[in-house]
Structure formats: structure tokens, C-alpha cells
Amino acid sequence: MAIIAFGLNPQPMEAKEKKNGVLRHVVCFKFKDTAKSSEVNAVVKAFAALEKKITAIKDFEMGTNNSPEGLDKGFTHCFVVTFADEQGRKEYLPHPEHKKFVELLKPILDDVFVIDYWAVAE
Image (cartoon, rainbow, N blue to C red):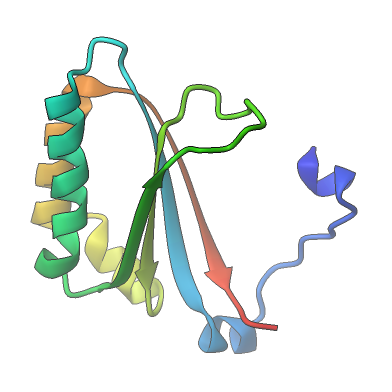
């Protein structure tokens, strides 16, 4: 709906654009109400540590929601993992360290939102 509202016309990325851009993997978490601060902090720390454990990760950013719009639907934490190409993502998703992280996360996770896109400088 937002795409139509803003008048954007999404087009599939051409091979040339993929070649010039990087692949971003955006992950947002909504934690269970019962999640303790220490558990959330452990998850955040573990996610950040993946950058040093998985060579396919080229950059990592994270932050907590501070939007005044009230449209977060309970999602509080956002992480952006950058890959040079699709091969990087293919290595990351089944990587044992990523799977270990997911197991740490599961007990306190209420919901997750993931979107991947090619970031291209215009």
C-alpha cells in the first residue's frame, strides 16, 4: 500500500544494478513482553558478534526504534546486515553461527520482519 501511496513503481533489479549495489538484509524484532532486558541485550550482542564470525557479512548496523509515528507495531530493534552479493547471503543464512544465534533468539522472540533489497546509489 505504501508503494502505491508514494507513487513508486517498483521494477526488478537489472543485472547491471545488482553489480553496482550491495545486498542489504534488514531484520526487525519484536520481543515477548516476558523477555528480560538481560536476554534482549544478550541477543543484540550475539547478533553484532556475527560480523566477526561470518566473513560474508561486509557491514552491520543496528538500532532501536525511536520513531514518533507510532507505526512500529511493537517492533523495537532493527538490524541491517550488508552482503557484497547474493552468494554472501547464501553463505550467511545456513551458517552454523547464524543458526546458533537464531536458537538463542527464539525463546524471547514474539515476531520478526525481514526484507532484503539491493542498495544502489543513484
